[in-house]
Amino acid sequence: MLSKLRELIRAKTTGRSTLLIACLAGMLFLGSWATIHHGFFNKHQIIDTPLYQRYGDWMAHGSAPYRDFAIEYPPGALPAFMLPTIGNSDSSNTAPEPYRVRAEYRRNFEFLMAVCGLVSIVLAAIALRLLGSSNGRAAMALGLLALTPLMVGPVILSRFDLWPVMIAMAGLVAILTGLEWIGFLALGLATAVKIFPVVLLPIACIWVWKRRGWRELAACLGIFVAALAACYAPFAILAPHGVWHSISVQLGRPLQIESLGAASLVALHHLFGLGVSTVSGSGSQNLAASGSGLIAIVQTVLQAAALLATWIWFARGEADGERLVRASATAIVAFVAFGKVLSPQYMIWLCPFVLLVLGRRGIAASALLVVSLVLTQLWFPYHYWDYAIGFGAWQSAVVLLRDVVLVALFATLLADVRSREQELPVLQPAAIQSEI
Image 1 (cartoon, rainbow, N blue to C red):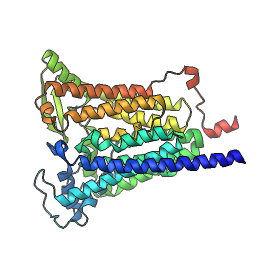
Image 2: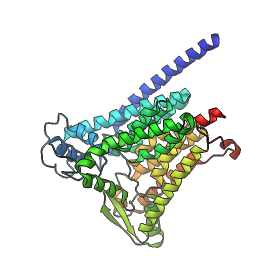
Image 3: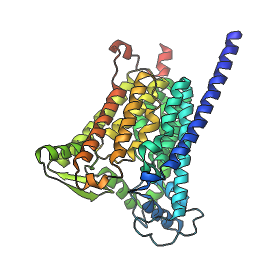
């Protein structure tokens, strides 16, 4: 009786401590968010909000995306463009001037993204509580997450990536709490916003298969597909060609200037005089060089191999919470580090997932994450064109170093120093295990 009472008191105390840490982290996040509106953060910005504003205005005045205007983003991204137009009296039927955004739209968009960031902190706090994290570890993780705006820089203000990150985090936390149906629903919605959450699907499937069995897995997959279809189907019926165009544009993107392969070719340019140039298209600056097409293919193969290795690693071990968050972080890092496209806003995806990893591995991974974020901000956006057009020497070195750090982060998350015998628990789903 006394032991149960002590456990209850300890649980309540830990819960209150986590709540207090989360509240402090939220305040720190808002302070970081406010800070990046001033000083050098406010100079040389490269923003996407004028484009989002244009989409939002067109939708507000009755134009249908994919049919009446081309858009490269998935349907789940549309609310992030539309919501900031609500109550915006200055919107018009015509597109705004290039790189001009109304103050009211910008304010509304940034408010929406700040809310997504705060919700992500709450979700991370819940996940850490479920994982049994100590107060010190929770304070470190949530504190670093709260400092994300300062480490990522002003790019976080004008991209909608906090929107899919929040939804994907909600899916992960729901799965951790045993609400798998809600988790798969959230993952389906997140994938309809940006493609990267789909790399969490195999991990979630393995989790359900091992803990719940095949029948529950089939139901969860049905929910994922239904959520994805609910977002895509209306637009696919209305404008199938427009929807296919948005998908094909993303799948067919060339070697982007900041990717590992492109940064390596730029290094060869500096070391041995390899001819390189920049070609704009598909919403980014891309590298044109001898062998760039082949490098893009190689990177796609490496990306697939890294993801497959991550999924196999998770399948070969226990389906517990710590391994779930570690596999999720590793999969997202693999998608970013080895992809043929690596835009600065992709770094936003990594933060909450990597910071959930516990133990010494988690501390090392968090340190590498911070280094990669700082290296990114050293040149973006302040010296972006010096690299993208001029291939400046020190900017090129920083980009390559950042990409190498991301590969090191992937290796840190995936590598296991334990003996193989400790890493080979059963592959049977829960239903089969119970029979044994």
